[in-house]
Amino acid sequence: MGRAVTASGRSGGDEGSAAVLVLALLGAAAALVAAIALLAGAHAARADAQAAADLAALAAAQRHALARAGACETGREAAERNGARLASCVVAGDGSVTVSVEVDRSGVSGAAVATPVGATARAGPSWLRAARAGT
Image 1 (cartoon, one colour):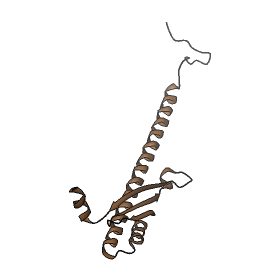
Image 2 (tube, rainbow, N blue to C red):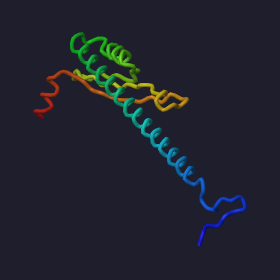
Image 3 (cartoon, one colour):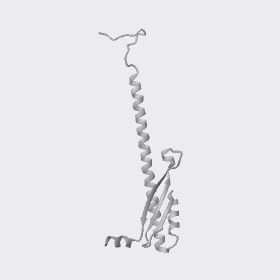
Image 4 (cartoon, helix red, strand yellow):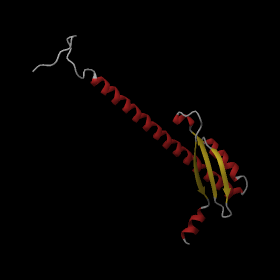
């Protein structure tokens, strides 16, 4: 009851299959790491966009409260200082400012075409929050 031996003196069967299995596992692990890196990059881009939108809205609302002019220009400058591009800016009659920004993150995904990540934020005078809470 011994093993079958081929003409070359080796036993037949599944020699080398462990190497193939190890290579397959390494390939799967590399794909998983790449997917996690893409997700982490997308999450970071979203966080950057939201931070830029928040800061731009706050700057614009403060400017509007103090000067009533140039609020959106101040919001644009704040967005640019935070690596974003101001997509829209709306000053409402109640003194609140809503801004939307886009952050270009083409390098994160490795894509040849830039894919902007957007975010929106709203800010206004503190009396707005108190007035809305009472209604």
